[in-house]
Length: 340
Image 1 (tube, rainbow, N blue to C red):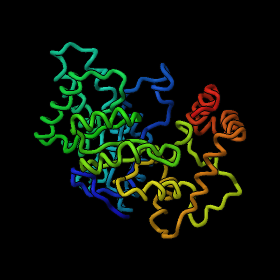
Image 2: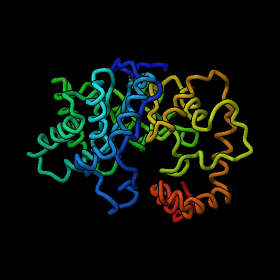
Image 3: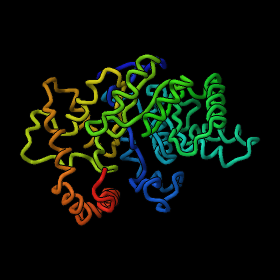
Image 4: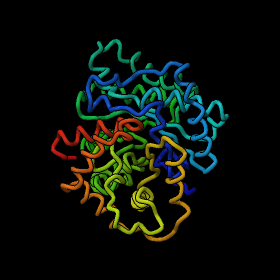
């Protein structure tokens, strides 16, 4: 494993992190309103019924040198909390947690309730993770619902909590890069950011990376594989005749991302040891990658053949049985005309 520094936090983090460690894959409520509540705790009985494989996944990751674990939904935090407690490894790793739509939450409350709401955002994650501190507390930061007063209150309150030691760094997570850049220039309040960056979405390199370098802000990369369609790995669109060389398509994507020195760590969604081992394999190889693999995959995904592949994913019974969420996202992409 190789390590990099997470910006001004000073944390030495593994180039490969572990993300997407969730109890169950499902359709993102943002994209599928009404399908599921964004915040829904899993009961202990249900959680523990499937926790064994989760513990093994976290154990293997730590053994391989992975020390950065990202969680977004409450159930991911619950699961990781159980795993780290079982393994006795909480102090050996860095844990990131996220609060969703914080400004929307504050916007729906009277000003007198804001402080309690922010405290609850942090406390709920501390409780779920079964820990007394969070290394990186990410605030979900879309432009929708933004209010200057609410934002400034949120950041100032988080700074107080940081001073108390319950969180060690304040991060931001978003897909809206220009909006995040505006906030960074005006407030310089984030110690790290988590944004999508991959062969399809390269704009972070221009919009954010120079700014992060100037402000000494760490960069965590999400969505290394899910492109160009949300929720579906690009590997489904990798042409059979393209030469991947010694690397797998996923490893090529990771290697391509890590060529950017501004990137501190990449947190691919990882839900099996097989996926983890494939990701780890990138560190055992030193040869050059064939970037043509990524180019051809993107071209195929956006072509008529790519649309046919989306339809195939919708109709595939094995996908429907084992990875229903992919079927849902494929249907969504087709409904949008195959636009990403």
